[in-house]
Image (tube, rainbow, N blue to C red; front, side, top):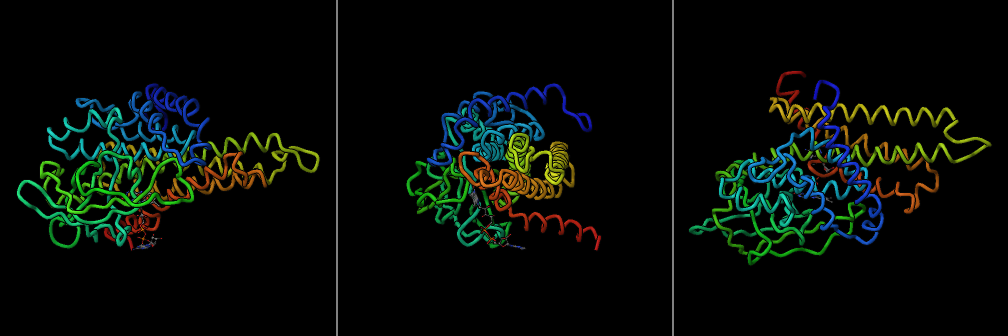
Length: 383
Ligand SMILES: Cc1cc2nc3c(=O)[nH]c(=O)nc-3n(C[C@H](O)[C@H](O)[C@H](O)COP(=O)(O)OP(=O)(O)OC[C@H]3O[C@@H](n4cnc5c(N)ncnc54)[C@H](O)[C@@H]3O)c2cc1C
């Protein structure tokens, strides 16, 4: 990226993802939501275009692209279906964690099949008793020769039951973040089971359930990096995850804004198009402005992550908070501009609002994003 514009390559990547979303996601998104269908076959088609391992290194088949490229892709895919785009973003995050922190043997063993989505990956941090306070996790892994014996429950896991690979944060040592390690746990390992599928407000095109570990013997060879590194690994995955989920909010909101522009240009009240009321024009102008500001800032945070800037974690938290709040507000305003029709499922607005609502909660709640930013400010003495 030159400072405020995209390169020809970036525009081509974004347009490819936009076309994929228009052809393969948008026509089915309402049905998938209604039927709670997880479109694995369609995600594999996205994988064949390089969208399952976007910022994973290319020597194992990854696309070797940047975080900014990933933001462009997830925003574009979310114009078709935020829930499917968001799932692809989680798979990308887990795949990158194996690429970044795995041994050469682990990279070769898993990544080529994650690239094609022959294997589907989930990220397991949250537990029933610890969400925001993730370092309090209790799932225990006790060393027994060449294995760990894992016991515990992970809550709210996206992809649970379908995914083949669970990149799981476990406690191998003392209380707190330094006692946490990361294990790659496979679905078929004896002792892995799943809770009932959660009934949710949105994100119905992907499953969410608890993952239960009962005396699961996981080879030590499945640990990423050293013992005690798990919390750092989990948080560094989330820096990128937050950019990605912010991008999904922008894409959903952009599609809601586009629908609102078309609708207000067509719908008549009091003898004229509702788009001719200046109050609604100002609303549309504010929606477009807020969205553009959030997008520009998200790109800045993604570029900081690409550059490994010292303030990248703070910028990712800021951008996630802003993009997901703005995205939800713009989608909700677009619903309002549709009047009663916005509330009907067939118009597609209420589905976007429902999907985007959870982006303010997961990958760290927006309160926790403020906590990360505030800690950085206070730590630097700016009181
Ligand atoms: C649909 C869905 C999919 C998910 N997918 C995954 C997944 O794939 N993998 C995974 O690991 N997790 C996943 N999650 C879990 C998600 O990340 C957590 O729900 C989230 O981190 C919040 O944790 P919690 O629900 O335990 O809320 P809590 O941590 O109990 O928070 C409750 C409220 O208190 C606030 N709060 C907590 N601490 C503070 C503080 N210090 N200051 C101010 N406010 C605070 C929170 O912001 C929130 O508003 C998913 C959740 C959902 C709903």
